[in-house]
Length: 222
Image (cartoon, rainbow, N blue to C red; front, side):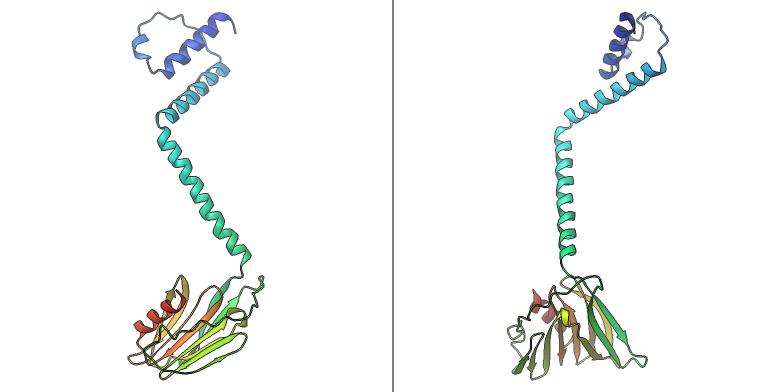
């Protein structure tokens, strides 16, 4: 490239970036044939300079966008790490052919190993203060409280126990308790609810309404 061509290239780039072509429209500029490689370089340089200028003109917007991307990246990364290091369980329900009973289980995924730590009892006495506590029973994986008209049970998830709930002439609902899937079976004068948290599964059943069963369940594990 000779000096004249280089001078014309630099002038063209400056004029394009500054968006001042209009005032130079009537200038008598010598016409030259621009090779394809040179035309590509001109267009690429203009795009780069326009992008830089846009970032400078909108520095606050660009900085905010970068910050949001960083926060989203952290938020996605943490849950992925947690789910990879803790055993995951899924809920399995099965109603018999006569619709008299439904079984509810929480099973660990086959490729993962459940934690077999000893159960730490979580009493429902404070939540069920309106009922008379009759007796309690506990093992390394099960804790039970018997009230005058309500029964509460807590089981370690690794035990993979099975709850059998009568369903004849009752309503069955799949619900969510504290972000986990749960099952509610109820009629006008009786309800049973099965749910879980990170470490245990629970069942509460007795002479209570469906709304009360859900409220008690959320209070017990909150």
